[in-house]
Length: 70
Image (cartoon, rainbow, N blue to C red; front, side):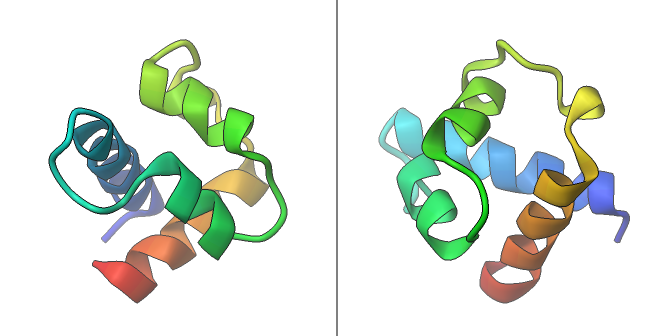
């Protein structure tokens, strides 16, 4: 699976958790992925930042999160 698809799946899971469906909250994702703050992922969950413009470091960490929990 491509990294972009993994990142999209993690962000979608965080969006679902925000609306009460699922366990992959932005807070949990940040705690599991060292190196960035909750505001970083929250921008993608809220849709105020485009996933396509995400930094490679953040994308790789979200890809690792995907590999571990999905």
